Length: 213
Image (cartoon, rainbow, N blue to C red; front, side, top):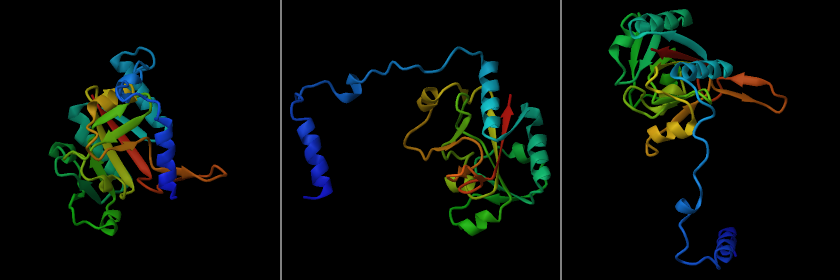
């Protein structure tokens, strides 16, 4: 008997006394858990997002729509970036003040080509305050998943307050599970058994989040 057959046999024995007309699992399990922790104003929710992003070692910046292009240009200049990867649906005004070469998000780009790009600028689908997480879903203003995993510097623009929610349950209500979701909580990092933290192992070493109000 294979391991698969052994496991399926145990499942069948566990379900042997369950009536065929029993309540389906989706309705039998209570879904009355908290949708958020505490009550916060919109401003407090955005402040919590900024606090938790910073706690994860992301660099957080705030601006308004008129100042966004200047902030993005300043971040690229401070990074010394000579090239920036641009998703096809990104608002062109966001890079209007940046004097760097723009690299298109192409399906045929190899990992080596992407690794030579200095920075990438994207939007996001939603940002979660309680966990300090930004979620990308592959929309045109975010591009393919790999463009935010290979370049070493990622600038992510979050529209405030429209794209900010308090909790994970609230975020899930906005997301399409059929899309390629990437959940980002700070720059890429890992720790070994001695808790030596290394950043940039499987994603950008530097994450900068711009909150645009």
